[in-house]
Amino acid sequence: MTTASKRKKYIRPMEADWWKHHPFYRFYMMREATAIFSLWFSFVLFYGVICLSKSAWGIFGAYKFIEFLSNPIVVFLNLIALGAAILNTVTYFRMTPKVMNLIIKGEKLDPKLVTQALWGITAIVSIIVILWLVI
Image (tube, rainbow, N blue to C red):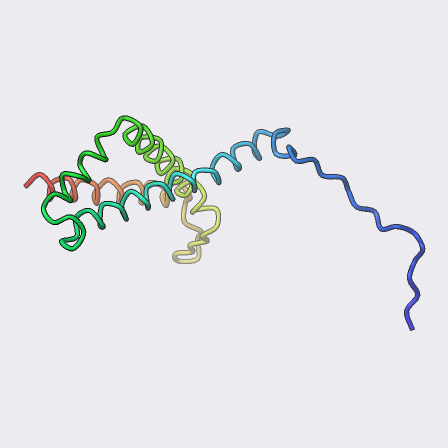
């Protein structure tokens, strides 16, 4: 047999703009909002696959996709999506050493070394991809 209290349970009031009051949470919400631009870029890639498929518009699909990409609004949205991807990369690389505890020979690995290794790998892969596309 349980007895219930006749008092109302206290529920702390939460305003809709709670995140605006602290810089950490503003940055957090901005970083989470970058998912919208990741979704945009996914739609652009999907549209490109549809345009470039032979069954959709044949050879003119490539021209249709290039015409779509040359629209100033699409260029602007793609630049924002690039900025959002860079923001996510920077924050991910800064966060990785904090959540990944690497111990080598009984000592914790320096967090700066992990971050520098991630940026180094990113630079090497980027250079290889650019060279592959140019050649």
